[in-house]
Image 1 (cartoon, helix red, strand yellow):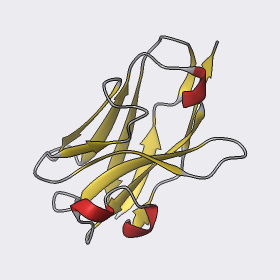
Image 2 (cartoon, helix red, strand yellow):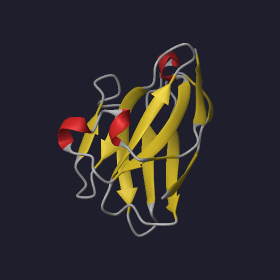
Image 3 (cartoon, helix red, strand yellow):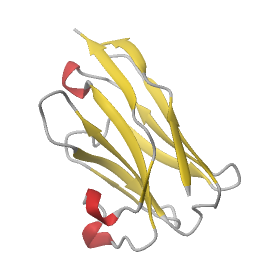
Length: 124
């Protein structure tokens, strides 16, 4: 499945953005779809993921601020980001995995297909 991430940009601290991850080629209705991010000079880290059932999992650093959702009819997963902080600045990438299970949902290596990243910059 091919993934296309979009929606990044420059926003002030406290602001909001919505990222989109659109799939083509095959649907990801039976896959986990997750968001990961990588800040300059740092390792890639898990942000959030959503199972085809709608169950969601979040990193502690974004819980209560970010919401992941999916529209299977549109083959799109969204990441709604509120109360953004400068430390949220990173390249955000979406990924889909056929074999992801709950215990591996936060591991980038569990995901098979990756989209290009979209840059989110939060100014202080």
